[in-house]
Length: 133
Ligand code: THU
Image 1: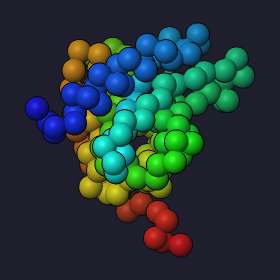
Image 2 (image 1 turned 135 degrees about the horizontal axis):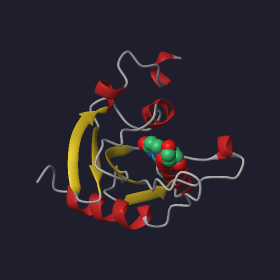
Image 3 (image 1 turned 90 degrees about the vertical axis):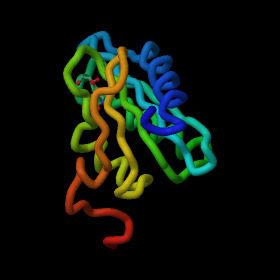
Image 4 (image 1 turned 30 degrees about the vertical axis):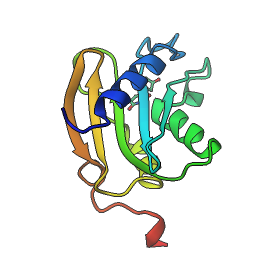
């Protein structure tokens, strides 16, 4: 087991992944965050006929996080489609940077299970965050 919360996060990400709106890419993604009070907040990708208006699963989950009154992410699970690594895109790495500290583990998975874990700092080195302002 990767952490005591990993299994809970994995199951939550898997359930929300099934809800993804992906008529264009057919690539479903689910994200689950552990908050500072050990709640779980989830999100899936939501695509749009005007392709650039599509939203990643992590961005949906961040909107849900803030809407539900949370502001800290302690751990992340992202479940993509297929067997290759689904790592957060560049934009979502920066979005996570706003609410997660650099040591936060980001578990990248497929629907079968865990593939790789990296910290936010490993995914986004020399990053610009709130304390840089
Ligand atoms: N996608 C995510 O939701 N999160 C990621 O970490 C990588 C990519 C989505 C965007 C798009 O809806 C689909 O996956 C294919 O790129």
